[in-house]
Image (cartoon, rainbow, N blue to C red):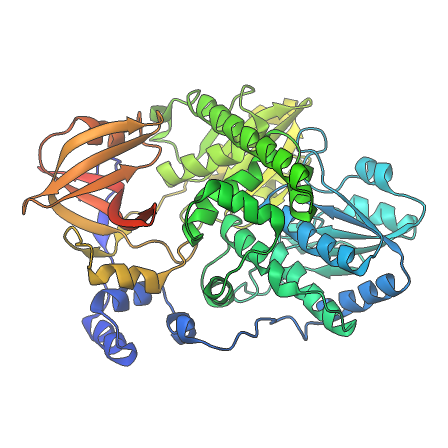
Length: 561
């Protein structure tokens, strides 16, 4: 079954005896049994919504957490001023907010620093630290960064400044920095399962230990929302511990923070969902760091002043509009047809805006199902953002680029990262990447979960999907195959998306939406094709003005032969 996007689709095949066993053991539908089996869910993943044990701190006996808690308790008791250095994305902002709020409650002296994406680049650098090191500061806590900053850590050691790194990025070649303490789940090359968590979660549970040691009355649970936001926006695996944390966190979610509460209420007219965080709240938080400075967002979350909160929210809204405009302008610079036959997508354009190259890489990697390197110029250097698909671990490529001295620095996660390089190395980097992926073969097939028909409002499939939530990495939304469909109405939304009214042979109709597909083969079919086709789509419950309606999110089309 070859689609208009050039993909060959197959159904996930799961043995009937296993489906029947899961159905019987857990008293669930066959569809839900199949979803759980295809995602390798264990018993705890399946029964997570029935769990009443709210104890979450899996790090309470971890020696790095205990060592860091002892050092920070000593710092607090001796009122030694702390410099907090964090990243400019959602996870960095959330981590800074949690730790800063804790220090504010204790009246502990501190200041925080967030690098300017366009001036400082990612992570710590000596110049920026020296600008912010005051006489009384003798300790620095790095949040969501620092795992590959050997020169910075070594420099601080010569100044007798204590350093704690709380990070989750891959450590290049497992070359551990010589900080006093490094909290990073990947530092021992262990298999990342339960411990594959974001920096905000690591920060939260470190403070949990400190809070108990100090017998403090700081209400830490009010800040769990930042762990939920970061887990979703930093694309953490949504199985095991992360799934448990999200389910427990959302079970009795009450947003207490004044700034965050207003941010949510200004942009949502309903109870917040997992999807709202990924598609609405997260991009708003990220937008300031993409087109301006991320400091405003931390100030929003630390402030109690209504006027200040309103001013920052207005600024963030403007930044988000700007980000969307820049993103579309940059997408318009790309000739998508050029990359269908490429093994790896490598696009350099000095007109690309540095703040959105990560978004471009993510979109193209998803469309083409290939590793994607998007590069631009910044302050006389090359800046590259990378996303991968097909379980291709890009950190291996980054390590090879470093070993071959083709880039200045780089890092990230298995499927997302970036690097900076000198401009004169552009052609060498491109040649290296083409050779590196010359024999790369993308996965032969794309898979859907089940054949089905258009769902009714009271369809059992809706409850099955809710049992499977939250969706994300390692737990994708189920894709359904619908036969003999026609489009009876179509229109373009915001110059990017295509909305349709679809009808099946039985005469039932349903609304559908396909994101970012204008100017693609899929978009062309949805707008112009009037004959019958088969459809691959996700079933989505849209809740607008307290009115629930089932819709389809189109993934692909298979034309009738």
